[in-house]
Length: 357
Image 1: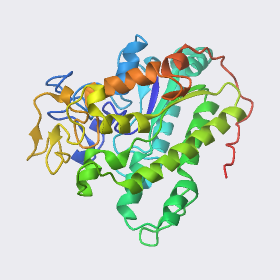
Image 2: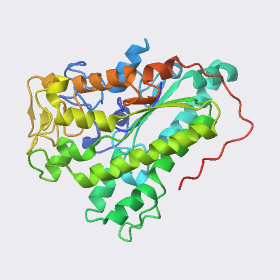
Image 3: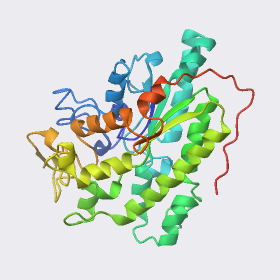
């Protein structure tokens, strides 16, 4: 696997960059369940979705790109906590575009190490996993708290400009992601495992920041993300029709996690509104930074901190994406995607990204 995205997938890249402590998880109690007294930089008490998937395909955990001395041929994790598609979402961390540049460096190194033919074969057989976009919507909600419905729709479907932040017109968020997939395709990638954006507005940290009561969620965030996920799905399907050998699985992270939040007992959890580690109304802020409280049994909680599921939650999500029906992961589930054979294709020219209305 080659892995891209944000803190849902980051296995420790932010340990190696100069970043605010809130974007790192290399301190107690992160990692307490599985890694015990060795926090790795994963934003949970143990393993991530991609760790469970690596185990299912019989490989070791995919190492972070910035970890010294790693072997690229076993896959690389480029994800960075706090990252967005747009660099403006968080200039401190490694944006999706920067992650793609790092992958290009790896591809060159692989060609030098194992030869052009073997590198192309490995790159075409690998699965490219991505989970990104939530931080872009957090950025929008934080900076445009009183956005009109038209402005919300423009951010999803077209552009948003800000006179205060002097940001140039933003391109389509889902089109940026498609261009990322397109560039990977032009470098030899053929199989893509994509998590859509999760239900940000129902996660404990979002509910705490908005001081929402009971089962209330931030409906503005949920509506925008639903529109984004629908548009992105259509765009990626269109991309498949344009690119020979392009195969993908879109895992419905949004729907499954939202169902887990609303019906925790169905998944074996006692608590889904409060997080295991943190402080505040829903114990959802600053896990590991005093003052905070830590639950006794993380496996009883859906969320470890305000934004991120526990290892138990990630295990369930990984299992669903691995063996799920088309309503969960489509058009292939992750197991089927890994089983697909890919033929290396040497492109004589780069393909253009389709235009989406």
